[in-house]
Image 1 (spheres, rainbow, N blue to C red):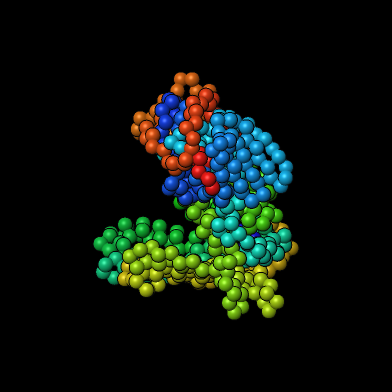
Image 2 (image 1 turned 45 degrees about the vertical axis):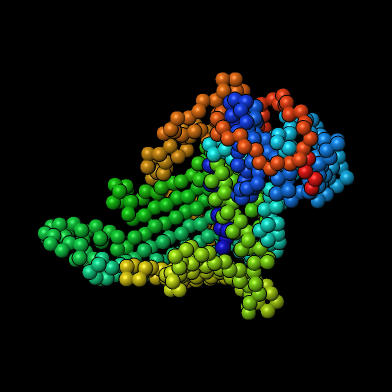
Length: 551
């Protein structure tokens, strides 16, 4: 429970490490089309146009998809969009946009004027971000505009998260107090090789001290000696005595395994050691070190700062921070991550939790097809005064009405219980159950091994974990990931490109979407080639309202 926020911050940083908020435009003046996605959903009745090395979007379709009302004045050739307390007005063909919010007027200059094509008003996609505070990205490979509207995302996925904030407060009640942890998890597994069942059982023992940031933990995995002996007999059937002795020696090494972990949360360093290291040719006092902070620093990400930012954030703010880490240059990756965040927010929204005897439950069932279903539940336990006393997660997978997998984890301030049962009938079965207790302690937490024999994981496995990443960090701290060598021909950028982005030739599909009644306006535009701003949170290409269609 104590590492809830840190885990979320780490997940968001992992997302950030594959993100690149850049725009890649066409190199010629042909008009090609681009798909448009808002919060992970494709706008079916709207397509962007790639023209003069810029991406333009139809104003009406996009603004209305973002919740704004759009009006067009044919006589004045002006477009007005109303979004709550905000009014956006501009003249078609001009580059000045007036934005009035809560009575305050602000005028901005777009980097290219709007134009009319097939009775539809188009604007540079960057404008959408400036006008309605959206984040906009461009996937050059798939010719897709990616738009994230945070306010709409929050509203569409519940809007209110008071109970989720209470759960987070409950999880952090004892975060500043060191806790002495102790517990045992018993497990048993059975596999069928087609002739007989092969069983293996044992237990996992956990002991140590932890607080909100640091931990010193000892984990022992003990396998049942009789089960292990039977497996060795089965494996070595027909072996010579010498061959069997060699297998028995290897099996004995795995009968009692130990793993010790030290977490230095202040410096974000993880240390680990195991009695199995000797089998790898390492000395018994060897510790392996993973400098998580340094790894992310090489990606241009200040992990310590991000964790600090999220420490006192509400659930909503943490999810908004997570949205900032969504990759904006790959529509498939962004859609997948947005779907995960959407599912999480929906299940933690106040409307998702239903009152039950002794608490609240949020439940979601997914039909996987062919008679398979997956159900996830978040369970909140409360006392008679409705104060939270525990939080649990339940997961159930079923096939044709039969439960194949179940997991039940429940936590109070001083106890965590675990129950798992998973398998495939007649093939494999695994069960585990146990309890881990926590009690306050004044015991100091060791944050660095006493051994001088510490190996950096990067050096141990021969990978450039900390160096030679060759990543260029943009001024806004977004990550520009260098392209990997492609197996297919890659289009060369135009010779006169002044941007630092690669130039890709979009498909030559010139179909325009969203016919909007628009006067035969002068569609000649001398837009300068759109240069994506370094700050992509609000400077991305933005969609323009369609011309001549009254809202």
